[in-house]
Amino acid sequence: MTTVSETIPSGLQPQVDAALRWFNSTQEDEFKVTGILNADSALTAAEPLELRLVLCSGDTCQQKSFKVATADSGFDIQFAEAEASTNETTTELQPELDPPPGPRRAWLDSVLTKHSFVVLVFYRGFW
Image (cartoon, rainbow, N blue to C red; front, side):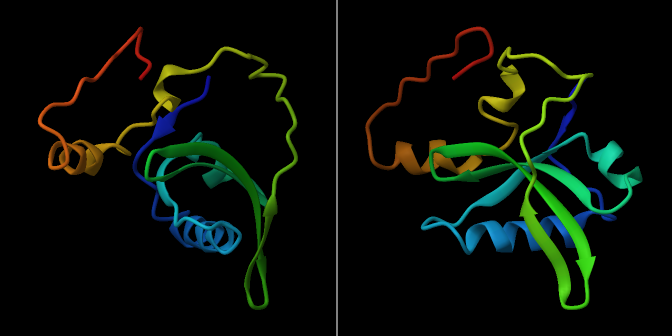
């Protein structure tokens, strides 16, 4: 089962920071890491690590997977191939990823300053 955590383990922080910098260098908008999937398995995995990160920028959130390996100049980073795991072969959208925990903290405050009211719609855990 996939577990989503808002907190990045300290043992993975350098790899997560490097993956985020690499990803942001290819994007127009600047993304932030708002979650990590299966952090425990990434902590115990051999290199190259596969990091599954939840990245958000403004109103956009997406889950991206990266392969991260130690290199002489820091880290070698690339997108992980989209391979379906035999343990996680589900096409059902997981509610905790739509949106992931925490990405909308500042959004509501910024929208309320622009409008007299805001309507939030929740349907079965989805926004």
